[in-house]
Image 1: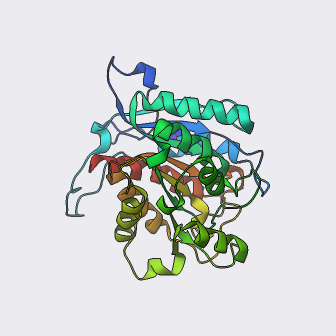
Image 2: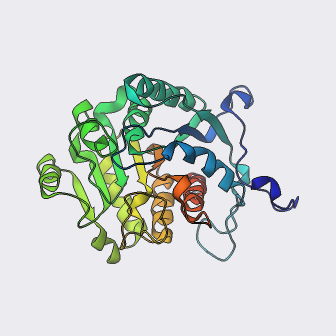
Amino acid sequence: MADALPHDPLWPRAGAWPEPSDLEPGARADLVLLGVPAWRTSLSPTNAHTTPAAIRAALRRYSPALAPGRGGPDEGRDLAGLQAADAGDVDEPDGPAGERRTAAAVASALERGSVLLALGGDNSVTVPVALGAWGAELATAGLVTLDAHLDLRDGVSNGSPVRRLVEAGLDPTRIVQIGIADFANSGAYARRAAGLGITVVHRDELHRRTPEEVMREAVAIAGAAGGPVHLDIDVDVCDRSVAPACPASVPGGLAAWELRALVREAARDPRVRSADLVEIDATTDAPDGRTVRLAALCVLEMLAGISLR
């Protein structure tokens, strides 16, 4: 429990950030968190609605500071100087009315923050979060997904957000999907992705390139029209050994360090306006809470990337 953690005035803890309304008048947060605990349309049984609270609690285990010795532009950087805020949770985000509430909450949060990070919830939240962040800029917007799955299924579920965004008007040639895995998608949906012109980066390709190189190229494609880019962080892109609380994670996925490096590199680019962190069921995590802890570290990687802008 966070309350049982030791107190050290020289070791500040992450999280427990103020609400946007508590910021100084006219001040803008560098990062705003928003809980979007959707779960009702998930294809797999899940309690993903419990996860935003679990991530917030896990943040208290970490310090908002980078370690010395890395070299480069982030040497010795302390993230405590950045302003983060927490806008709370969207009430009942599932269904058409819930998605409208979510999109409105995202737009409102971005009035007081530079970057919005939604804590899911299942992958269905990608649709209202991205649309709320893009607003009138949908015609020039782009999408990068970190996901083992193409998410082009028919219907409305956590398996359909990419297809739904294309149908809403997103240009599919500005979609890049990183980490797509064998045996996790159908041939029909793979052909659909190819026919739409989506850029797919197979899991195996990541063995031959650095995460930073892959993400820089992805954001360049997604942001080619000059509009805002949304980053979908589906943690089931990771190997099941590090993400056991993701119902659809499989052996052979990304390592934890790869996911963290990809998230940090994406957040460095000012075209990335919003992101979501999804597909974790905190109630099924390993006893050591490794999946939720990885998600909390991804929140801090977003801050680290923003600090390098």
